[in-house]
Length: 216
Image (cartoon, rainbow, N blue to C red; front, top):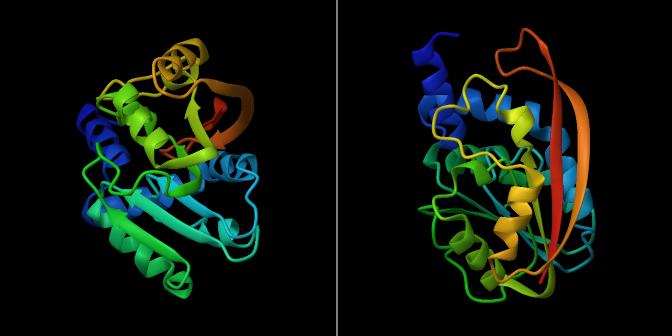
């Protein structure tokens, strides 16, 4: 891919826009699905819980979440209007259980202690003030609640050609340090590996990623 194409891809990974954004949203759902399902499994969802996802994309995985327990409520927040509209369209069947909220990416538009479980996959690279945002997540999570933060490890992410454009990447130790500066104090690290298709679709990549389970 040319430099300009890589820049456009990077911009749309951060904030999908328009037709290209819809296409990239589908591609992200496909390439990230194993990370997403691993994160959902790690939440250990139980009956009657309210789940928040930060950066829901097209939310093609919503059915999987809602099938895990009885009487669940799901809320997704995203900075992309394209993904907000796409997620609502794709998940019309679940509108009695699911809400999608468009927000500006800094303050979570919810009351304190609103959610039992929170998760986010591949969004941390774009957080402007990570410690401040972790404190926002801490604020809206109920006491005893679980937050799952999943990200590609720095040594893997650095090999991808588009990550030089406005991505901030983290090793496990850097992420641990970041979390320890926030109001969260307890965390467990789980490292995963898998082979995936590249975003250009013409090669297989060995991905190393981390699922961080953080308790309030």
